[in-house]
Image 1 (spheres, rainbow, N blue to C red):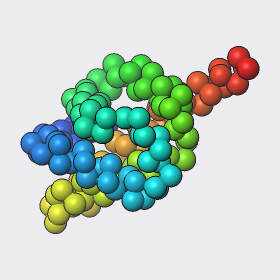
Image 2 (cartoon, rainbow, N blue to C red):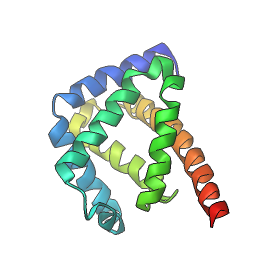
Image 3 (spheres, rainbow, N blue to C red):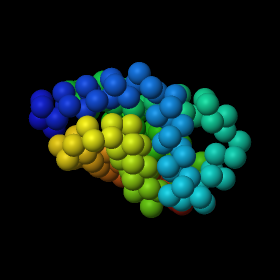
Length: 145
């Protein structure tokens, strides 16, 4: 990821963090609108806490874009945990759509094609790491059965 893209992501995320509660709530609203079948995965979750976990995870990744390799183990662990919660590979696309919709609504006309592409690229890289780890985690679980 080039320096301009990293700067664009970090600057835009800093703005999102000024409205983190609203942005996180909007994200989950969009997620459940896109796929209502995901709602049961959060049936026992304190959604306010879940929203803050989402923002903390995004802050960690966005803050470490220049040394992304340092957060790969965190993303892999998170992905394996998500498998245990019932998250399936197909859900990553829905999460990506919900993220882009959230950012589009938050930024309005300032969500330029350049900003959209930066976020799509970042999410694509992050989700690829998580999907690969989830596949390995599922294979390990299947082998143990």
